[in-house]
Length: 381
View 1 (cartoon, helix red, strand yellow):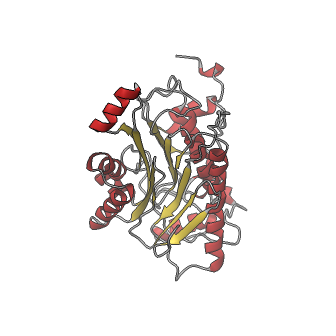
View 2 (cartoon, one colour; view 1 turned 135 degrees about the horizontal axis):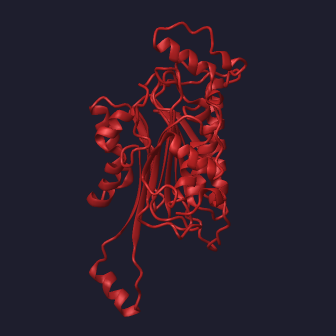
View 3 (cartoon, helix red, strand yellow; view 1 turned 30 degrees about the vertical axis):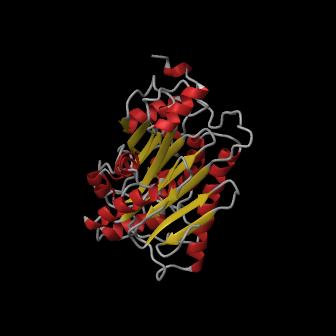
């Protein structure tokens, strides 16, 4: 095992040769689902969320448009939302029952990123939970995924993950960094406790400016799924969990197959294709890939293994990703689970179904135009 002290932090953007004329890339994001509705919202709130979603989409688009990895595109997009206190992730995370922040995140790829071919194809992804000092969980999970000698596992928690990340150059902050007044007041109201006085180390830290969050007592997450020009699909999710969760509660976000999933598989070759390959002496193998990120009541996503179920319906039943995702989201509702998912496949098909009043969501394609939506009755072209 290499020495942590001598390890260098991997650059977020490593130059990758661009394939001339190849522009098959797309990015889809979500910023949480469930507890928002148009009636109780203001134009200013809606505009703030749409602006934030567009900023996240543009950040990821810049990476993809320059030939970068899907992995780096989803990190770039999610970072924007982690730094924006309107979303339940990092800076805007909700409090647990003890008034503390416990963050979760995950990253999964359909195949190793083009810029890091040394990563084993079997590594696939990583989930992190019970983080309390990580400024950007999305950066931490990327750093650990790219450091298999330091983090050889698929699931890590707490101080171990954060200490390794700090040695790799990731930023840790005092827990007071995550305080926002609106989330604190929601936490106290939810427990039937007085909202004041505010914690002594929170003075002057409102976190939202003049615009309060649109969702209340949220259970959602932020996430992104991208397809790059190299055919890799990456899914990244980041969350503060559900409001007033029990201390130590682990949701679906870091659990592979529940709140996130990505995979690639070889397509079966028909007799005509096999004959053509034989005549042309071609060994070309056709593949397909999918990526999923969920948001909502994570306990139900865990029980249903929602993210992996969607991938398996596409792979083994031959369903479109849209049909598979809609079926899975409907099954969540039948059991009482509210939420939604975003997903895409290697053919650039995008899906964003939800079974509740709203889900912050958006998509951007090679034309560079961010398209966003909030409420259930809105379409994202």
